[in-house]
Image (cartoon, rainbow, N blue to C red; front, side, top):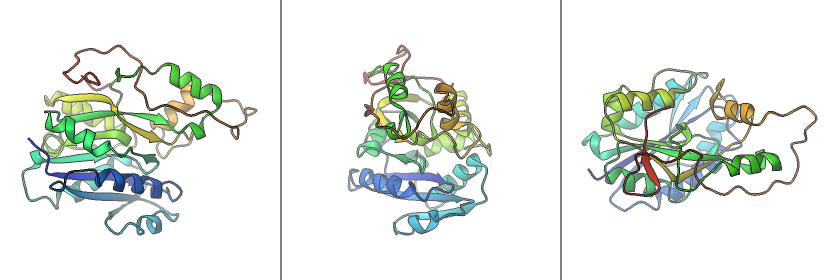
Length: 265
């Protein structure tokens, strides 16, 4: 089941400051794919009132879909629907790669997703790491000491999620939820018998901001994980953050030592 087409879907809500970085990184990742693999990038402008659309327009190969704001599940679903409407072949040969407009993917993001897909994965659950520029020095240390390379925890992040299009459709796609639509999709895929692989080789940098575009999400996790008092400064020099894995023992490991089979959280 070799992937022949990749659909990259990116929801964006008022992301004029970060969406350009995201799209530049996706473009670089797409250029690493084999010449016989086609790519379609769709940005969903989800109720944007800033200059996000103007930034996206600087990337002429990127298509846009407009939705009303406030529901990331509906936005992701609209983006996938627009992408798959252009597909004329077998959906089993199509890979849907999801990230977020406040994220930056590595050059090997898509090639690593496809490597796992071509090895039999229906779903790839990748790791994310917060931008260290958004964290305080002690927060960087606290985050990093819990990470063990080669031991991804299988946490589901819409900023780094891939799924075979045929499996996506069979599982019912993204539900119109304001948050945790990514976890809900992976739960549905698991219930449908999809082969789910978690990997920290596929690692994405994402914003470490505390005020996200949904009530919970990664911003909510960081707020809970690293509570701050009003007196703590945020504009200090910060150490770097290595792109390493996650914090729970590996189980049901597959042949690739950097991956494991997981159920949805």
